[in-house]
Amino acid sequence: DIHLRFVRSSSFALPEDKLIAFQTYFHTQVLEGYGMTETASQSTLNPINAPKIGSAGKPVGTELRLMLADGSLSQQPYVEGEIALRGDHVIHDYLEPHPESFKDDWFLTGDLGYLDEDGYLFVKGRRKEMINRGGEKVAPAKVENILNELDWVAQVAVIGLPDALYGEAVTAVVIRQNVTGDPMKAKVALIDYARQHLAAYECPTDVVFVKAFPVNATGKVIRPKLRKQLMQGGQAYEA
Image (cartoon, rainbow, N blue to C red; front, side):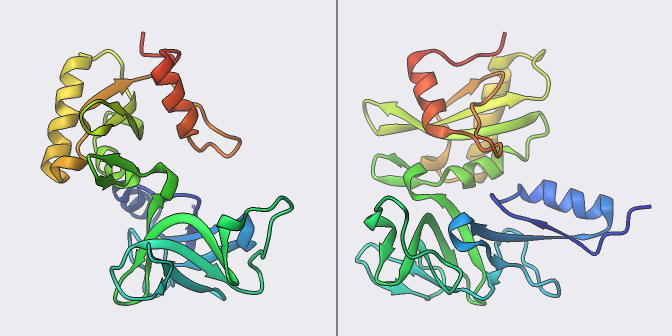
């Protein structure tokens, strides 16, 4: 028998259906958190007695604010901005200068998010990964979480590819569980599913099926490399 009090998860948000399935199967809690090397790992964590699925929890030994477009810092609920952190465990500079990563004594993470009315952090994604479709900002993580609900989707990465009309087109790059099915039917099914659960501007307008993603040492998709491969036609598409 496996006896688990809880499982801690970080790095990126788990798809909600997979988190719930894990908890149900192992009869335990998954506590999601948020952190990075620059903050000596953990900065936020869901409290074990009051977790909120989909959130990264509350700050732990860390001050947290949201940096807004005008440079001000906010703790107001549901106001989206760049996550800024401060604390004894948070770095104050890099070996090579990166002034854009610091404001006063706050470290700017490059991640976008918001706080709810109870102070729980919800991470929207990397600022540099946001897709600009005709002026509308699309968070890849939000679209990916929806598409991951399809049982035949093994992995998905949503990126922006050049578009003559809108600047960037929302593109879903997918690894399928089973590649024997009709890819055209799969594309239609994926786009239809997205239209049922997302705003029109967030829905992928194209779907690309591939065998694998370029990833870094920790298994995260290297989105700039994936984007470049697709634009150059060098990605390994499904056979």
